[in-house]
Length: 485
Image 1 (cartoon, rainbow, N blue to C red):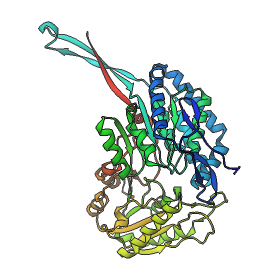
Image 2: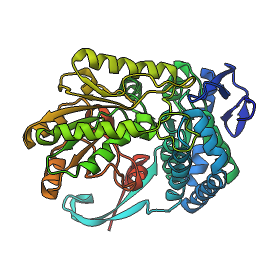
Image 3: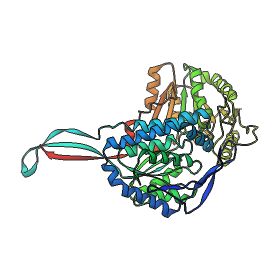
Image 4: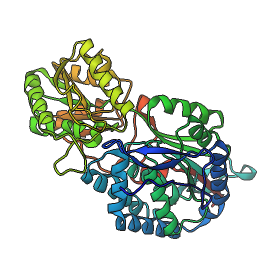
């Protein structure tokens, strides 16, 4: 990396010196400083919200096709700068090279391109005879439903993917005519500023996109409680989401929340174990387990329990842990030393609760970086904290069950409900079980995603849905216009 540089805030179309100075962004693979991120003051955050409010009227009246053209240009710019953007993302997050290019910057560019498609924002409703019409006479009433932008949207984004996650909020919000204030995760905000630069170069008007960062709680609070903000879109922990929800409730702000997860993977005796192991094994490798959709809570029918544990252990043991820039590395570091300690504390807790550490459980022998070895905990009971709480690292727990009813009951015995998984050769049973799982999404014999399908969670895993056209719905209000026919 080049020598660290100081970043400015992006407020009202200007690059602004932060009131709170700067703090170091650290590469989790090397522990070296990547750059210096700005610490905004409360006043600067509120200024960003006010700038977004001022820009909202003109932007919301800009023809949808013109807004789409700007998003398309931004997508093209991201693709043209894919390598340097991915190198920055890798330095901030510790992602492998392939992940940083394809799943971070590549997915972000694809999301901007997706929302450059103009979709109908209004539709006719069949006329209806109103028996108690004006002057007491029956009348035929026509109606139109119109999707209107919500207004100013605060986007609070997660640290595990500083490209795809913000893009999934910013692109549909702008497509619908909203303006945004983005508060990136403090661990890796520099990538989001590069996204803002691409949007500025693509022609986004002043104030339509604003980015403010900081490590203090005050920065996030100001981005949520500003009277200029109409909606908050948040990705992060359930605990923080609950606090944001309380603030939003006081002024009836709209909310879209993707929160924690503890995905159950229900594996039946007739399942293709190779497929199940590969899918479950993604918890070890994909973002080093720092992903809310990971199948971290494995429930396996007793007849194949020992085989699955053995195969998962072999899979985890073959994964190369180390510098994400080196060829062949599959598991990079977690985001910080503090988070590594948190993940390790859960592994130790599992030991104390009676789980068997089949593989992993010890810190990799690497001189620098925040690495956690892929860890498999077997013989886990459903009451254990390692089974019930989100660890957010490369740790998988395995619990046996006897029959379909018990498997469903164990899967649903959770505070979370984001994405669950079912593996079975009996497709009818797999879909029957899927429909009974209390989760926003269910993968049947796959951990793959359809990005047009609605995404969101039940219970403590979130509020609302996005992805595909559902994101356009999330960032809009529905208005009805009625007239006599």
